[in-house]
Length: 120
Image 1: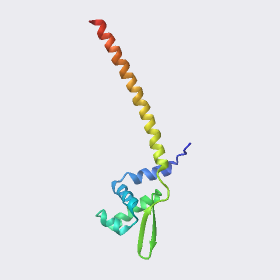
Image 2: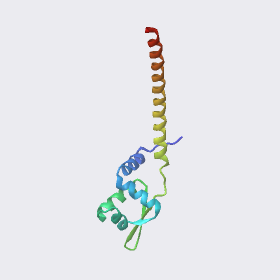
Image 3: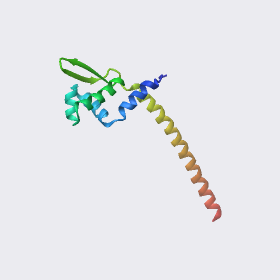
Image 4: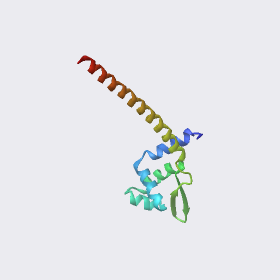
């Protein structure tokens, strides 16, 4: 059974809640990039991009390495398995509830058909 760390999930979902940070993760999935390159690609200031990278680093989704004056960003070593497992568990609950709702609707339709047939 997967043990969920609420602190880790909080940090991950907070990081993923921002479109720019999701875009950074998508870009880093293709290739490593410097903070300067990322800032240029997302048309934002270096300071703004550093803040986004800091949030992603705290969530463990990105790592950085400083070589000389350049800080290179890459995807973190941990994946999103814990987050995916949490979402999957919620999805299964919702699917079960929708299936139960479908059963109720079908029962009501059958009852309505029977009741409608009796009144004619």
